[in-house]
Image (cartoon, rainbow, N blue to C red; front, side, top):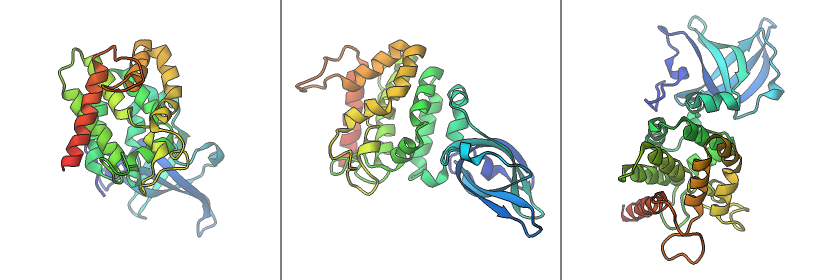
Length: 291
């Protein structure tokens, strides 16, 4: 087993004969109570991170699994027992949102490999996140994707049904491509770059609720436009950002809702970052159509 994403070598890929112990973050995919041949009860836990997916065994502990969310992120100690060929887990605890916001790498290392459609796009996505200098904006993005259903859908949904990036994983690819183009534009400050990367990554996040990876509209998507869902998905994170960096919270709302050239409705763009995002969005769409 090897890490697919070099930027975050996962713990599961690192367990081997020479390195037999890790403490890390993992996505909990399921757990089952079992009894060994000798009559000893234990938990069989299915976990994943960015490098792989494994079954690990938990003995001598009775954690409250009803408090652990399936698809949530847990912190655990893992030890490889090469003589018997299995991995033993100890001290599982749910990763708290406040800890994920303080150290986002804990959250992103636990991105399940089974959710990844195109590893090369995910690698570019993570590189963009780790290139940001604003800890607050990186935490904001992490808070948005703390919603596991949103993250899973974002990784697999198309960006459109008939226009551009209309295939499984297209939404992530378009979002990353738009952010890369935006970040390459002549911007005034690093802070502006971080705001624009944030705006670009999340500008179509509403499609995670309106389009499915099977190239159909969801029941919600038949009645509600993705732009409105973008603000709804980001609502809790925006309220948090209002307290941490109110200027960024206002900028993001404005960038996502101001009018584009020729639009009939919407406020006129009052920052150069808004047309910069619109340009990057259009360039990504055009590149996809030409491919």
